Image (cartoon, each protein chain N blue to C red):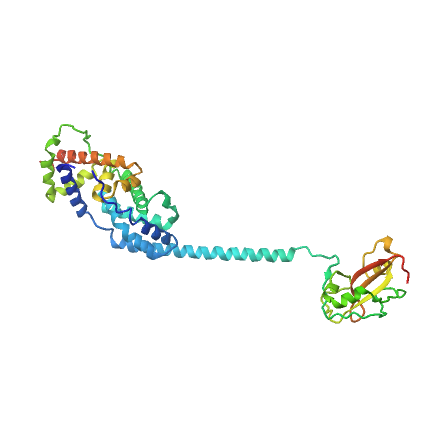
Amino acid sequence: MDSPASPMAEPNLVDQDLYRQLAKGREEAFSDLYERYQGPIFRFAWHMSGNSATAEDVTQEVFMLLIRNPRNYDPAKGSVAGYLFGIARNLTRRRLDRSRLDEPLAEEWTEGNGTGFTSDADLLADLARVELLECLQKAVQGLPEQYREVIVLCDLEEMSYPDAAVVLECPPGTIASRLHRARLMLKARLQCQGCVK
Amino acid sequence: MNQSDNRMSAALRRLSAIAPRSAPPALGDRLKGEFRRHHLCRRRERKARILLAAACLAASVGAFLILRPRRSVPVAIRLPLQTTLPLNANVSAGPTESKSTQLRAVKTRASNRARKDPASAADHFLALPTFDPAMPIDHSEIVRVDLPGRALRLVGFPVSEEFADRRVVADVVLAQDGTPYALRLVQNSPNKEQ
């Protein structure tokens, strides 16, 4: 599968320039960087937690860290976006651990567990219906964390595999394989929940 | 990518589309306010640190100037260029000198050189204990004298015992009132009793 276009690679130089100015205390630079990334980070936390309050808290903490410790970012280690998403990911994990919202669903998913994926093309056609999106969201949030992260970053936020690999601190190949497994798991969960015929 | 994956991707895109597009606007305002406050505090702290460092530096310099050791040994002084150099003048060496000591100015080539180059002549004079830096020395005179080494002791010039009986030729800076302020040895004349 082709990786989606990277939203992070091209603007990285702009981001780094903004970041340098932010570290010097220029409020315009902070505003620009905030406007660029508050949405993606908020959505990432929202998809991961399924909770607006948690997403808001995570977004706030990410940017507070940026304000208080701007020197923590090392351009040699990756993009500004990767750095920000990395913080958001860690904060979200911590919050989910605390609130135990990331408990996997009771039933264990195993690949090819006899749920009949042969007819999944017809099965997924039902997802076109708006009312089933809620079902899909629940299925996403029910995924184990490492699979939920790749679905959120690569499918929902359309991040490239290399960028997602930076955020999740693993090789791009791992991202591709995790994404494949995550989609299979999603289909199985949707079927198990009775969201699709 | 098969049809199933396409449909899954489309469904996920739709899910992404219904997600909130951004954080609440109030959050942005809060964070910008926090940014302003944080950097205002940092600027104040930086200014305070600079002021503190400047105060420490000033205190260190002050302490050094107050506590530094001062030299009390004879020091070389530089005379003003207008200093006159009278020739063949008989003068007394000052109030601290004994009356029996007659000073005789002698005319030498060195004095001529000194006249031509008063700046170099002013070099190498040693201040005597009677020299007061606070007193102006604009109208001083340089007198060349030929006298026993013992006489130099009387004006506070350190002379070893072996030179006490020898005659020496020296240039003496005299104040307007005749007080010797500084002295420069020109030569020793052990065999020339004049």
